[in-house]
Amino acid sequence: MEQFTLERNGSTLILHISEELDHHMAVQVSKTVDTQIDKGTIKTLIFDFTGMTFMDSSGIGMVMGRYRKMNFMGGHTYVTGIGAGIDRIFSMSGLYHIIPKCEERMDRR
Image 1 (tube, rainbow, N blue to C red):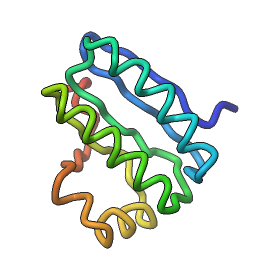
Image 2: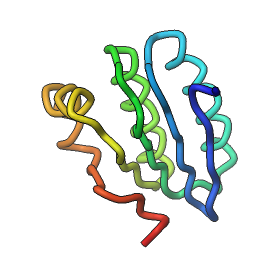
Image 3: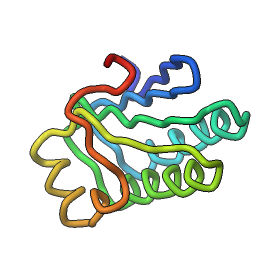
Image 4: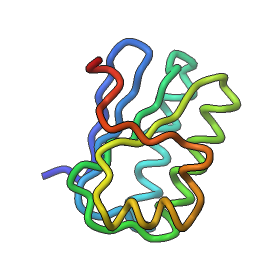
């Protein structure tokens, strides 16, 4: 099973990450997502963490970096599918102060 996949829905890019987001995975995800953002057609980036069990500080850095890039491009970033362990990391790191948490994926509304 792939550890992350991208889904495109119009100008929305949904990044599905399952299991673990460590340094090695963060580098891969960053490069892949940045390639899509740099095309200039992405207006909304959604991190879907459904099924994620572990994230270290490099994962936080990856999320922050993509948030900054989307913000610079005039886009928006959201997170969804966050379990209790990842929720604790987001709360402690202060990420929720800048990146909204959605209980359901926005492209399905």
